[in-house]
Amino acid sequence: MPRTRRPGALDDLVSAALVVFARSGFREAQMVDVAREMGVALGTVYSYVESKEALFALVVDRALAEDRRANAGSAPTLPLRTPEPDQILERVRQRLEELTALPVLQAATRRRVTRDAGEELRAVLDELWTLIARTRLAADMVERSARDWPELSVLFHDRARRDVFDRLGAYFERRDRSGQFRCHGDAAIVARSTLETVTFWARHRYRDPAGAGATDENAREVILAFLMEGITGGAKS
Figure 1 (cartoon, one colour):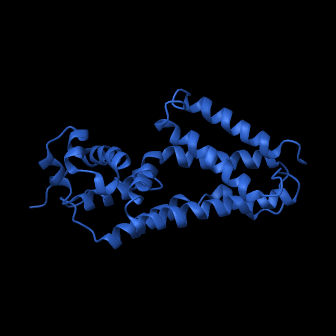
Figure 2: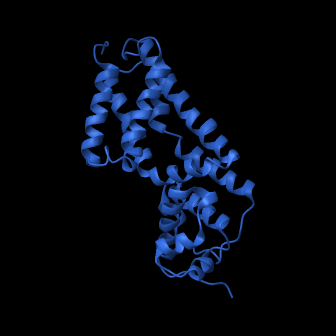
């Protein structure tokens, strides 16, 4: 007879597994570590998922979802079955594609000109910061797992990250040509430096003792103001 979950159990499992996968990566993570993080017996974890692969797929579906609540409505049959490696990779690809749609950046890039380049840039940076901050543990999980999972590395580094770099660079190039941004002859470098700065302060600083002291709100305001001044300062309005 199929098992049913107690209210909130899968959310608790996803949260615990996300911490473990982000810290250790898929290959090195152990199910007993997930059970310990969740505060349950190992057998309890296996009553929800059949294997580590099934757990990783569950975390991908929940933690990398554009809206985590969207996958929380229906009660699945437990334990969740083990997917094939290609199925897991396809789930990652789909989730990354959804997350990096970045409609604000897309709309800004399509505009030939804008009346207020500073306001537009702030909206683009806010969108990037919000996404990176919201998915920071999920991104850590994928990035850490990609170190010894070549196919996952291709999806994360060579496709998803490169695509965002390229799209942000195209946007910067357009505004630089119109004289509204200062890119000093290389919009791609300025765009990448901008994204890496946002990524550090919205995500990586939590693992760096030197950056962990700032509050989220203060870090966001200071860093985005700093970037906007450097990108638009002295350029034509």
